[in-house]
Image (cartoon, rainbow, N blue to C red; front, side, top):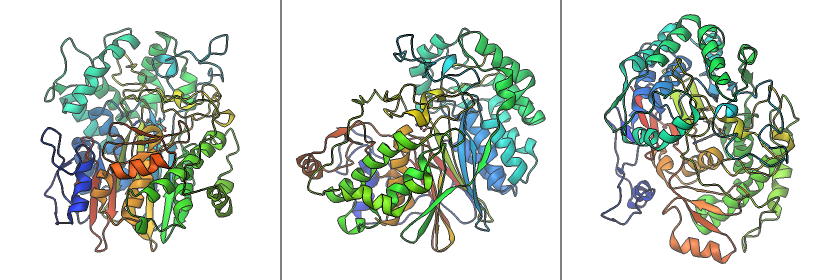
Length: 577
Ligand code: DON
């Protein structure tokens, strides 16, 4: 967590301050463990703000806002900057979802999710005996979906942008040409992935070198600078046709890739209506299918709305039980009903119906856990370092953008397009490669999320905006695969039900349940030993795991100033003025 400007600090009771330390260390001082800064309020800006996963990307977005650009201009510049400074997740070879709310109150979304290539098929990751071939949907050329980011940014600019396109792409080109100083986390990520880069590329990708990368080393991206220059000069054509497209298709042909020129030419981002709903006196605006995020978040919020979480208390046995039981039911719905609405009918209204949601919670018994109905023993695979990235922006007029973008796993498919300098996604793994077989996030699915040519794979990304009394209140989102939905859920409830500041809410340790496997996963120190014992006694299985998610959020304070929540788990940073 870093601040690019002086931050406003206030003293808060010890309990809340402790929340900030709990993620890594526990509140009691343990001399060997990492302490994170304790500050009740995050960075404050009076006019406009960007919170993203990298200080350089936040700086680029802020400079666009200072130039008089709007939140959409800043989003475009930040997205391209992240493609350079955060190769693990920032991207032009992936996709994402963006939710916006104009200062007039009008809200909308842009879906720039990847699509399955035309040659894709339902059983493409299975062998002739119908067994899923390990690793085929997660690494290498066949794992790649048709990238959506560049068309998304071009469409966003066309509809809502105000500054010239070239001005918005140029900062990323400058960063790519000049090089970026690696943070400790980025250096470690590149070193960890070295063997995979070498395995999945015929050439030696520029992201590897003989010796390990160190924090402080400068990583230059000359080929990416040239690709971005083509995008600056030719817009969509600078990526989907011409030199970049030729390089991408040639890369596919070096191995078992199937993306063709026609796939690239056909790709189109889609403007969609958001899903909206209420939680108490807040209006929640979030992403519609093909992300499951918005529907699931609204279901989760409505399911706990009848209960007084504040009275139960943050991370109390009852609060954790209620949230867990809602999560279990919602993820079961997700596995069955959610998919690309262009291909399957997603019963959004039915899933959000208040009577339906009440019925779903009617089987709740606070005396004991409801066991998840086993469809197939969903073994949770080892977590791959989680990489997707979220940014939140508010401009001087009060326009807001909440965008989550990804290559899927860290560094996506690990395939670098030779000569073009960018990584390709492994988003195809977000499809259900076989009914009931868990993907890399342990999520199961069936027919609704089966692979089909041109179809978008189901997502959990949950870029979200909240209104209170008809005014902009919060901009929030996070990476984290299947945990995205529950992390956004907790960040919101931490503020609106438990009274935390935005910074406290994103820093507070988290827990997660996704139906299968039937366990509450939690960060170290997220749940006190007493509450853990009480939950076990009621039949819950608890599984500790490392820190996850990087929630980046903005809260509008009662006086109109903006408070950042920049997740201390990453290099996330706020910038504003
Ligand atoms: O769309 C999705 O739900 C996933 N591809 C997101 C992956 C992710 O968040 C990985 N990292 N943190």
